[in-house]
Structures are given as structure tokens and as C-alpha cells.
Image (cartoon, rainbow, N blue to C red):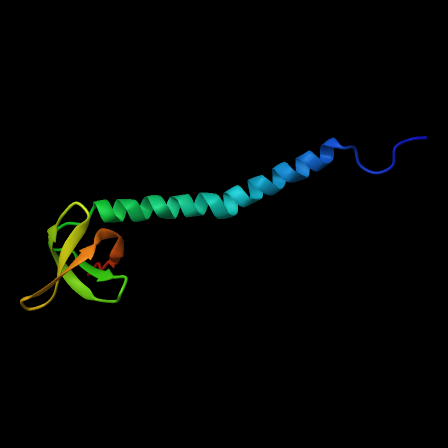
Length: 91
């Protein structure tokens, strides 16, 4: 009696297609975003105007290994981890 339905190897093709779909629509965009964020953090320099993750807006006065000093008001500076910088503000 002949076999009914699709051959067994077609299920492997569907699994491979699902993996490719997930890679191109979820994994790859996340990796791109992580690379862009890492580049933004590496490019921070004194004089850059930034927004912190907490919503503070200020100007970077000093860049250290793990943190930056941000002037948020006259004579008021806070130390913020580099990962706490949400984005630079481009005027």
C-alpha cells in the first residue's frame, strides 16, 4: 500500500524555514541594534549632549572606563554608567 501524506524529510524543511524566518525577523535585527548601541557608547566624548535612561538631560564633562560625568545644571554633575545613557541629542 502506498504511503499517504508528505514524505518525512519535508518536516525538516519546515523547521529550517521557521528558523530562517526567526533569524531574519528577530535575531538579526536585535544583533544590529546591539552593535549600534555599543558603537554609540564607545563614541561618547566630552561636550556631547545626552539623555540618560532616567530622563536627565545634560552635557558630558568627563569620560571614564565604565562611567561618564554629566553636567545637568550649573555646578551640578552626576556620574552615570555608560550603559545608563539612553541616547545622544543631536542639535
